[in-house]
Image 1 (spheres, rainbow, N blue to C red):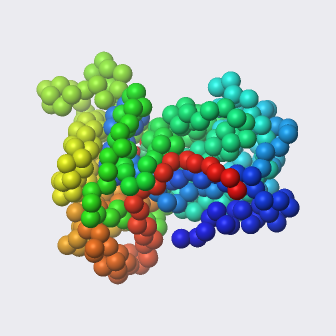
Image 2 (spheres, rainbow, N blue to C red):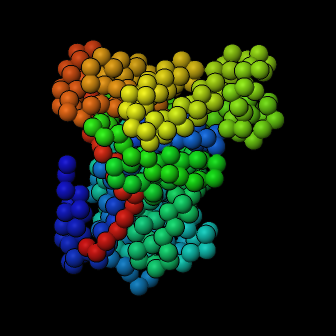
Image 3 (cartoon, protein in one colour):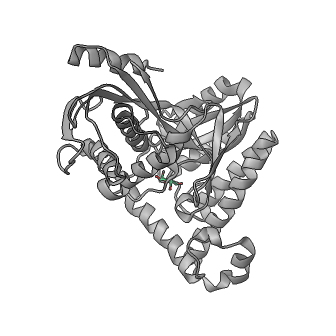
Amino acid sequence: MRDMRGLVSKDFAARFGARPEFVVRAPGRVNLIGEHTDYNDGFVMPLAIEQATWIALRPRADTTVNLYGIDHQELLRFDAARPEHGGPAWSEYPKGVAAALREEGLDLRGFDGVTACDVPMGAGLSSSASFELAIARALHAVSGWPWDPVRMALAGQRAENRWVGVNCGIMDQLISAIGRAGHALLIDCRDLTHRAVPLPAGCAVVIMDTMTRRGLVDSLYNERRAQCQQVAAHFGVAKLRDISREVFEARVAELDPVARKRARHVITENARTLAAAEAMQAGHAGLLGELMNASHDSLRDDFEVTNRELNTIVSVARLHSACLGARMTGAGFGGCAVALVEKAATDDFCAHLVREYSAMTGMTPMLYVTTGADGATHDAG
Ligand code: GLA
C-alpha cells in the first residue's frame, strides 16, 4: 500500500513551508452483508477498510479553508463559516460538510491542508463518505468541539443528501466514523445503535473490483428506494423494517410482481444480516459464507442490482475451494464484490480470480485484502 500519511505530510511541508500540525484519516468501507437495507431502517454489517482519505493540516486563525487535492491537482479555497455552491465538483463535499456542521450550531475554524485518497472512486467502497468524514475530523481537530461519531456521520450524510444531492443512506458515513480494526459493525439503521462483531478467525475478506462502472446509478438507486417506500406505504408502516416475514407472506398476493421481489429482498436480507452477526459471534464462518451467497442471489434475482460482471466475479470466486461465500457489495450495478476466504489460501484464491475473471471478461480485477480498520482518527503531524 502507498504511504498516504507520508504523501500528504510531505506535500504539505513543500506547499506551506512547515510540518502539518495534524494528520487526519477517514476510511472507506466494504459491506459484508445487509445491502439496500439502511434506507429501509434495517440492519447492515460493514467494515471500515485500510484505504482512506488523508488530510495533513494546520489550523488558521480565521475561518478560511485552503485545501490542496493531490488527486485533483487543485487548490480549493472557501469560507467554512459561509460556504457557497460552485467551483469544482469535489469542492461540494467539504463545503457541504461545513454547512451541515454549521447547521448543528458548531463554530468552525479554518485550516490549510493537503488531501489525498486511496479509496478507488466510483467502485462502491465509499470514497465520498471517507472524504466527508475526513473533513469533519479536520474541522473537529482545529475547532475544539467534541467528536461524536454518530453526529458526525449524520452531518456527512446530510452534506451528501442536501448539499451534493445524492440520496444515500447512513451506512457509509457511519462505518467511516465508528469502524473498528478486526471487526465488522452490526448497525441498526433505525436507532443507529451498533455492535462490533469479530471477523472469523482464519478468514480473510477479499474485495474484488470488477472494474465496471455504471452511469445512472443514482437514478436506479432512487427508483429502488421509491419501490421500497411504496410497499411500506401499502402495508401502512413507516419502513420495510416494520414488516415481519409472517405478515409479508400472508399478504404478498396484494403486491405486483416487482414490488413483491423488492420487498422480499429487503425483508429476507434483514433476517440474513442478523443471522450473520450471530454466526460470526459463534465463530461459524461457513454459515456466514452461506448467508453471503444467499444475499447475492437475492440482490441478483429480487432486487436486480447486479450486472453481468458482478455475477461473473461472484461465480468465479465461489468455484475456489477456499471461498466460503461471495456477494456484490455497495449499491451495485457495477463496482465491487466481497468474498470470505480461508486465510491460508488467500494468495491462491487471488491468483485464481485474476486468471479466471480476466479470461472470461478481458478485464483484470483489482483485489484488496482487508482485516477491517478503525474509523476516522487524527493525530499530531
Ligand atoms: C450505497 C449507499 C448506502 C447503501 C448502499 C446499499 O452505498 O450510499 O447508504 O444504501 O448503497 O446498501
